[in-house]
Amino acid sequence: MRIFGYEIKASIDRSESSRPSASLARVSPTIISPWEDKREIYSPENYRQLIDMYKSWIYVCASKNSNSVATAPLRLYVGKQSKESKILVKTVKLDKQKTERIRKQGNLIPYHRKAVEIEEVIEHPFLDMIKIVNPLLTRFDLWDATQLWLELTGNAFWYIYKDRLGVPSELWPLPPQWMRIVGSKETIIAGYVYQRNVAKIPFESDEIVHFKFYSPTGSLYGTGPLAAIMDAAIDDKNIKVFESTLMKNMGRPEGVLQSTEAISEVDFNRIKSRWRQNYGGQNKVGQTL
Image (cartoon, rainbow, N blue to C red):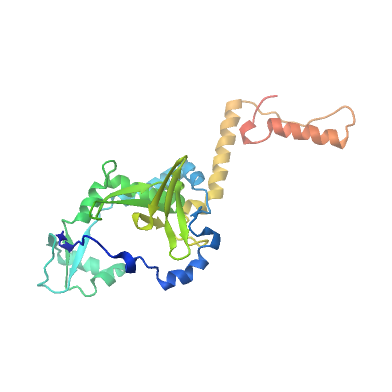
């Protein structure tokens, strides 16, 4: 049976395609520890903490990047190996200027090296899926969320919903702070698990697309730009708490504690500890006695 010009088989023999390659089995011990086989592997970073930092100047910077990605137009092109080649989907020819611009992009050379002509695909199931996404979200939502999670955590996940024929029909972005990778000593990744509170949903490895900014500390999870400035972000947060609390309390005792009588070192340490407990920290700055 042919759909959209492609052959769709009623049943697929997965015995060969699902067999792990020798390279994966060889490399997996460098990525997966023996005790992580068939187990959920937690990310080395606290993604919930990173996402909680999404405010102030971090909000401005991350949103600017994610909005730019979400508003960028997506186009699909096809390379024709001869002028007589017939394309099974609707296309339009490109003018000379657009064709030259595409050919000059180094990352696209492997895709059009043998192409005599390049045409833009204007009708295709993939374009429909990217445009509609799912019943809840828009195309803008999909790309905005994807890039935003990458900016904050270095990771983004898509769940690919497939119809009865196994053809992808919907895309659902999943929050990275609730996602876990399931390890495999044979294929490195056996699947994924979404867990939030008591809800726990397993996914097959081919149901999830994992985007990530590569991390030098591991190959499974990514590291986002926010991690590089986390110390500065925490300092900025503490300064804001300090200043806010100071203005709220409207008082700032300054001076020294003095005793008219000699006190022992034990009593001194006890008094100092209680003083810090009652008046120390950015949340108690300016508190009156």
